[in-house]
Amino acid sequence: MKKTFQKTLVAAAVATASFVALAGGGTPATSNLLFPYITTKASAQTFLSIVARDATLPAAGTARPVHITYVTRPLAGGACSHYDGDMAMTGNDQLTFEVSNRTDVNTLTGDTTSTPVQLPANATDRIGFAILNNHAAGAYGTGAVYGAVPLYGEARVVDTATGLYLGYSTNDLHTLAAANPDFAVATGEGPDASTAPALYVNKLVSWFSTGAVDTTWHVLPLNTEALMAFAAPPAQTITYQVQNAAAGGVGGHYNNNEVFRSSTATYTATCIGSVTRATLLDPIVATHSVNGGWGTFVRTVGTANALVYKNETLQPGILGGNGQFVTRVPVL
Image 1 (cartoon, rainbow, N blue to C red):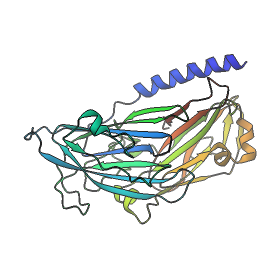
Image 2: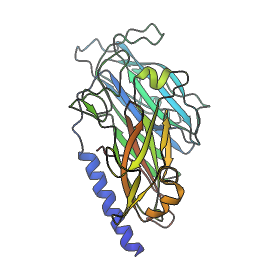
Image 3: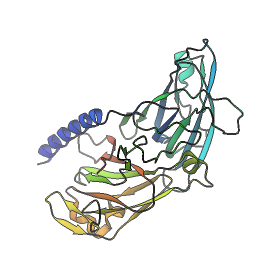
Image 4: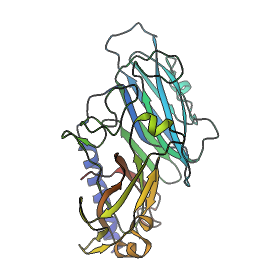
């Protein structure tokens, strides 16, 4: 039975990876980027790679500032705080760095044309996100003149303690060019937005057997950069409930055999939130789907959108028991 489930889990993981690789064509790059998942966990390193494409072909070595804002909170929970500054990039430059400077990528790769802004040494064991912007009208108190060039980004997260090897691109994780970009804009240009225009605020959440995989969801409420990062403190919130339908449904979820159980539990994410099955489904009702299940993740309070990511950790004895996955939850 265990071997059969392991084979099934491997097949599902391969299918999921293939789906993620093929899903979505993205949207043309703009002057901003959202990196929705970074971590400074002691056993992990988060590498960001950014390309600033400048079609005007400026003279080699011409400095173009790109502003980066980190928003993080302690892994165990708590309030978010921001840390920001101007990175130096030249036209058509590639900048790759580790957000906590645990690996000095500039020195290792001989990068002399760019200078990152990294989190300070005391910002360890945290989770969060990062926003980049170089819109010409950007005003961050630095007096810099930004180039408004299209930005392209990728992230790599490696956690040696959990076996997490996460890679993602910012293919559709940007929004309309603006001094204060709005990542929840409903014009088809923001993350999880349609061409209606409308926001795909509701998601579909599912999970494997709890004996094989421990599941947590990270919820990132979206809004303007100012409200996500610079409010005092950053406190964007959104409330979700697992229901049986996308609109007007009953709170609750299905197990892996189509049986529904109702529930009144809701979850509110502040800044960036993390929620487990026990909290999301109510501890008693959660026992209904220990072998797997699913439900619709429906927004019940709030007006903005959110990105939702599923974090899965293999239990001891399952495929070696040292593996972790982070995948984006599909929209309804």
